[in-house]
Length: 572
Image (tube, rainbow, N blue to C red; front, side):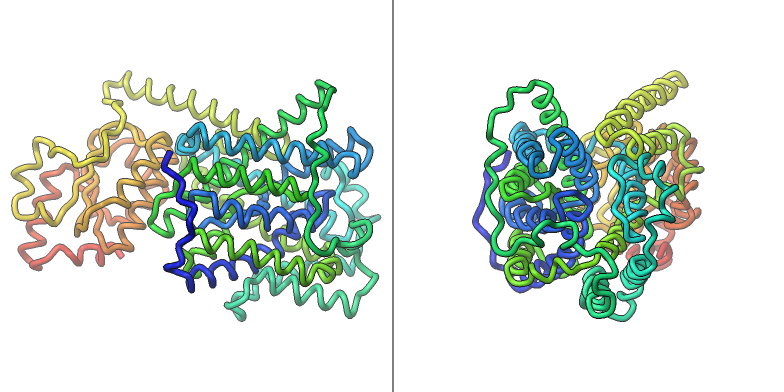
């Protein structure tokens, strides 16, 4: 593990300040909404966002990461809180158990980083991630059915909500429904008019203001679900969960849920770290990121906050607003702290229907529409894994869904590779991405154009285990004009590998680098054409049967135009 450097970098102070403020503003309505999703209340979401925002940024390994309560972590937390209340009889009696689970989850997550397990995230196949995230989106949407009409959501799973739909007419509130509908409408329409302020915040302020002045007392607000109202000032320190549990069954439940939260927080955070890398063209430290997230979640438990993880939307906004260092995440957390100290009394007047509307848009946004769009063209095995993981996420459990998805993916992949070997094709793993030795047919063919062209040799299947390394290689490319992807020895491409190729081509296009395929055949060709990579991104005429045809075309093009630099414009 790399040595920790905890000193802050102020070289990009202006960009980090603006990025952190923007991300903090976006985080406010989401933190409140996620908190309101649980019996701990909206303020618990804000406490968690503050602790994670500052500590995960300072100790973490992704410079622009913004952390706080997220949809997956909130869904699991809500289940944990309901289970603990069911065992203890009330929220107050259940708090030691709840916060004990959250605290232990943070410790376990940090331990994952200390043991250097963070890098294993690359071995999670795309169908598993796709089904998991879509399942979370479905859970969020289902859980908001009752709050959207002004009623309290039924306790339990998504199945419990479906079973309670018969009473929806009895609890329906027209006023709350109007507020929720207006909130959703503003979230989607506000960016067309107001580009400086995040649309969830616009919806939160405007609709809450309308409700306060024109519907006061007609719709449930946060204060109605918070005995004594929303707390003001600094959060209290909670240490009661350090008491010793003598009940073995309780201890087993605590460890089971803590392991689930730790594993989910690790997956959630590191997936966001990968997104941050793609935007900033940097490389995060996976193990350090887990340590930072673990510290943040443990401290969040100490102050009565919800656990969380790296938040994709907030991280993207932070990076796109000019942030480059860990200072931005600290700024976002401190901004939320300032809001807590100065405006906490106003938070209690926010209608629950407004938060439900915001959460509905969050649920809709994290469904993997790209995966569903390509479902028919994907191999049946990948499609089956995605659907099974989605259904298990919604109706069984999150950790169980990921575990089953991983087992299915591994078994199906081994079966596919055994079929490839049985038919006589090479299935050697991808070679190192260090400087590559030319293949036998390349040395003479490259005369005159070798310094303008980079050739990537793929030798074996491109699947989920190597997809992330392929993307890393593309980011580390030397300056070049043409990128030739040799596919002659690739017998199989899965969904993760396919999307890795698509992302790589998109990144190269942004750098004005042309991409040519050689030897594309069989299953890889069918996969690439199934999602319109060819001819959508790469024209048919830039896919060559063999390497000699490709170099002959390049030499002819160079002779006619005097340059290879503008080939990418043909593809654009």
